Image (cartoon, rainbow, N blue to C red; front, side, top):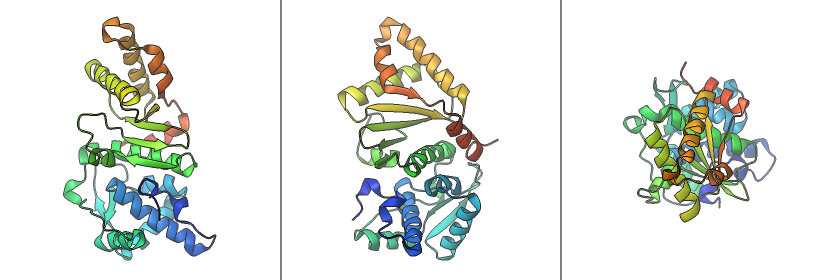
Length: 255
């Protein structure tokens, strides 16, 4: 029995070194990943499985022929397509986990306006999963289902074995009032709710991260905002990693 928050992590499905076991791990990790996120793209699966694009495309064509997933064409992301579960894929998951599952994602409910952002958030989680840095994760959709109300939902939360880390993907510039509200919600999530210990700000753009850090420092400098700079410097980290930025820009950002 795979715990709910660990579903989608390929290593959880392997119980032998056989070729069949490795294939099953890819199939069920993909089905569970799509179920938990609602949809996914070939680029995300590249990072999740650590495979070349050509191999991923070959597997996706196979799974389409087996009618466990369906392709939805879209101009809202660089891959120009995303994948959702078909009834047969959902039934496979229900049989595998021995439980009833509800899934209602379809073409009309794909979040087109935030699709690139959402896929980049998936990719950051997938990269951590593939590198063995994620024991389990919680998606934004799952946080929403947990009736958080007005509490800050993160793009994702991962547990690395010692702490809960929130993932935030910066895909656009934000105004000062928005940043102030975000910082206050970060503080609440860390201190009052104790949901996470660290918050990672990731992006495809160095400029967007620099802009976020610059505005944050301006807000820290104003005493009336009552924001402790040392606290935020300890708990909020900006991921200026060239490889991460390059991967997000190359595989997801529309050029």
